[in-house]
Length: 179
View 1 (spheres, rainbow, N blue to C red):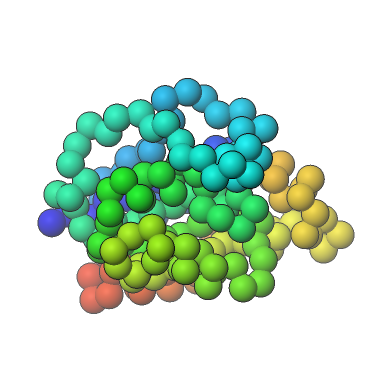
View 2: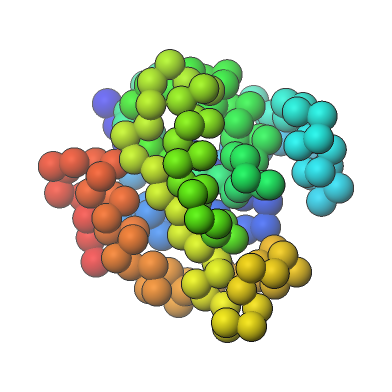
């Protein structure tokens, strides 16, 4: 089976992380897309009403891949609705999850718990890279700064150790960690 990176990115931040992982691992990458472009207000209503997203059809059989690395933003402490819908639909069993998010203490455990309720198996690895760690002290933990921050390629170097650690946990013994 082949390794696959599946990602959803509203702002483009998690897409940049997906590209970084693909360059380091050397595998297929696919974007989970919605049928209609999402507006920011719909994030609030999806969370409030616990709605599933209407996803665009995928062009391949996900079950032909494994392990799968999932990436998506965290919205109000939950995995973004489009990825949550995808995970529930596909019932993945060999997967890991990484996110580029604002960052909050105890959030990784909540993500792992949420994933365990969406799929038949627990994730192999869960990691979060905090945008807060890229911001000046006076802007940290303020939604207006964390939500508007756009990650660039050079920011990935600041997460180098965390990315390497995640790859080693997600793909143990694979030798896939590249500098």
